[in-house]
Length: 327
Length: 259
Image 1 (cartoon, rainbow over the protein chains, first blue to last red):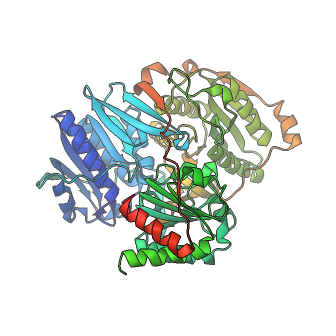
Image 2: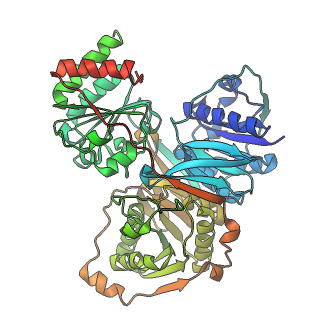
Image 3: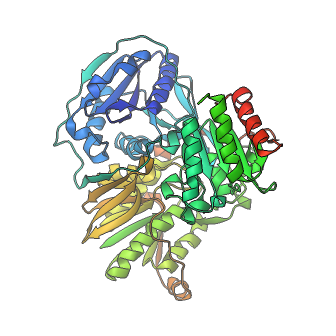
């Protein structure tokens, strides 16, 4: 039976939400080709955290569990994954287009002798072949690509685009895959991780984002956005202008040279809407813009807009959310 | 040390992207071309190594049609020593495996100690070539790098990862790096550099010179281009701040259904 394999991303031994989106898509593909979904989960302590997988139509879990795998690092895990994939001979391999997906999947693809499609926003099957749609030119255009025929068909999926469809109640077969310290790529080693301060979801995976532009005037003022974000469970972003002015770190930057996000709600405060910023958030489901300038380009791309002073409106919006959510 | 910097000529991000009439691709006639911004950061890091050790040789490699010669010359004007132009006409978007095969062959032939890349090209946004080259050469890699700390020919690469975290990765030569926006601003080409570039060599070659059959490496049999459907016009919300805020929140709950 043909296998649709998902490389599952974990964080701290728990399966990430974005991985569940990928498994949902894999299940649909498997249905179309009369195949089955097999997932690969790796990390430290993951073998006791597989229950989430039971809610999806997954036939088998390949579990690689070792203390050395506690933090994802390409050089440590890639050779083991490659060997496993060569043995499985999949029809297709899917993963999230997270930073891990970007680092790892192209490496595995080339090692398997095939190309791949990155950051896909749509996936379908036609005549057994995978057809995917992905944004190019920072989302100003799309290209729909038909895989030529050499398997495995490999693609990564943009986080926060595909719904999570729990369709089953299922106990997949679990196979333990051994990891050996000798199976590493030589010459590269993870030396240290400096954890960021963010307790919130990374911007690329956030469902709701509130963002500030240069009109925030200074770094301290971002506190009003963090306070708003706390009420609605959002992550906080910034425009390039705000980052360049030192009001926010680069890790918060949304845009062409920052992060590309696709939340269901994006609220832009004091952001004019330069093309490069739009490039980073144009696929947001709903866009709200608040700006004192009625001619600001962002109003052309927003769904809802308010002309006004963000320093007055942000606290008012926070109050209104608190009232709605009865906080 | 010998450093290979892989650069790509891409359409300026401010360009208006229009489809060709037959939908088979993007209309290039209205585009302005520049060096991929992330590649500029990669080139800058290589030139900083050369600033410290003038014995360093920095070679820029670029793959594409006739017009990319201008971008290679710009890299030479910034300070690269020589260029290599692998001429290909009309390589479709997404065929990164072919690009990676060519670059890995170049790297082996040139005996580079390291390869520098921008993490992704801002036209196809693929983010694939650097790790693919890593696999073909079996070199260690670090992508999404913001800073390099050198110890002789080896490096500690600082990567930006999720949630603002940073990873420090130790790499021994030969290795490859995929730069994101780094801590060093790319330099401008000086007039002296522009003049000197005219005397620097750019070798023009083809994929066949490296025994790479691009057609055989095709991943996709068809590519259909489209532009996104425009959103409906914005709904402006008036009233005093308290009223506007209340109305916005109501719409987000009842109409947009996102809260």
